[in-house]
Amino acid sequence: MLYLRPVRKTEIIMGMPITIEVVDVVSDNIFDQIFGYFKEVDNRFSTYKRSSEISLFNKGTIKKEMISKDLDEILKLSQKTKEETFGYFDIKKKNGRFDPSGIVKGWSIRNGAQKMLKAGYSNFFIEAGGDIEAHGKPKDMSYFRVGIRNPFDINAIVKVIKLKDMGIATSGTYIRGQHIYNPLNYKKADEIASISVIGPDVYEADRFATAAFAMGVRGINFIENMVGFEAYMIDKKGIATLTSKFERYTVHA
Image (tube, rainbow, N blue to C red):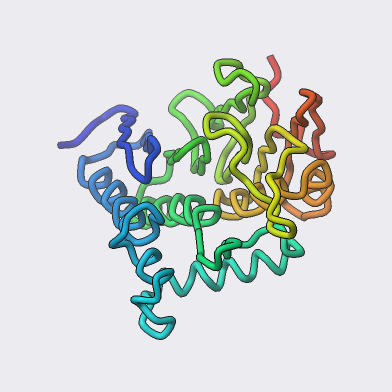
């Protein structure tokens, strides 16, 4: 079926709502393809599924030389991110098992967006669990508008930003509460409530948002020193700190 207007569809995959909105003329096939891809990612990387590749790898059922190309890529990208963030990003947990959830979400959204671009779509966004990659623009605007939620009140929006051919990812307490640990001491990261990072794509934004949250109040300075990234941080007292060029992405009333 062909749709001649913007179409938005949502499915629950990886334990969260994943939404795809396409502004171009679109067929059902692309939604089936992209949602199908996310289901494949979930089946491979979910630590909650006993039959997933990451679960079997953690158990030792699958040896390093037997892993898939995707898992090999994630392990290498995770090690690279660990080095780039001075150890504040680490998918290897205290029990010795690997949990790649801090990198897989952004990685898979970016991959899904690339599949859509290759299929000929140029105006769309993909959102999963609050992380977004947007390409092109909506029908009557020059950019997509994205709201950053208040970590103390998820029904309130603290900032609205404009996003085009970029990604945004937020690490914070929100619905899951404090769930990010500082891998350097295995203590819960609790100095800040949230940090939203804008980057060249959602994969880059996601991995550095996770690390910056683990860094606590120093995380905003880490993002400040990165070329092509901006961030908006809210500490546990509700005080916001912005990187120096974040406001260029802000939608002003």
